[in-house]
Length: 162
Ligand code: ATP
Ligand code: MG
Image (cartoon, rainbow, N blue to C red; front, side, top):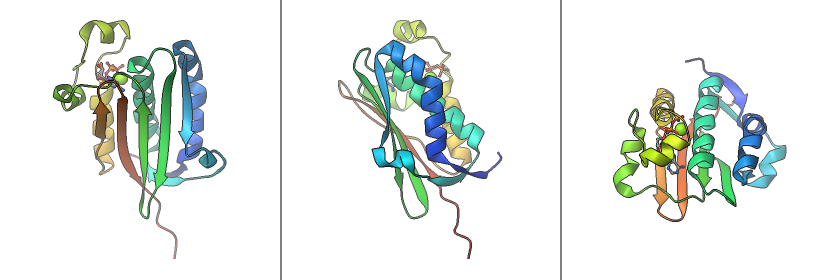
């Protein structure tokens, strides 16, 4: 792991650019919340490349398994005293409670046929969990059937130099 100081808002902008076409094909929108953050900076202390990989998987999942038209994928950033909460939410069908813990297992996919059609290997969340835990954080899932899914974790803010 290579921890460095980087701007989380710039990373989110970069990923919206990268995944913009995929979102458009799905008829989904990608938005940052709250909107005023678009012109601000939120420095964090983490491995930028690995966190980039986590966010790509969470946004990709939100697009693939989220609502097919009128999908809304929101990346919400909430700075606290010593950490920033990062949440990726969609307005898709959600994940039933009995699957919620298991989707972090390698190769576990909920609807085999639908997931297979969407491509992928079922490794994204297992890798994401591993990366987030290497940052001494945890991925939490909140999902309500018929309403959508939120995946969230925290990243440390750099200490202010005395
Ligand atoms: P990969 O990420 O390796 O390309 P994948 O997306 O199938 O493949 P994971 O990211 O680990 O693998 O997700 C595991 C399974 O969890 C998915 O196949 C899907 O069934 C379910 N899932 C993940 N995110 C969501 C979501 N936002 N809404 C509904 N189901 C989800
Ligand atoms: Mg995935």
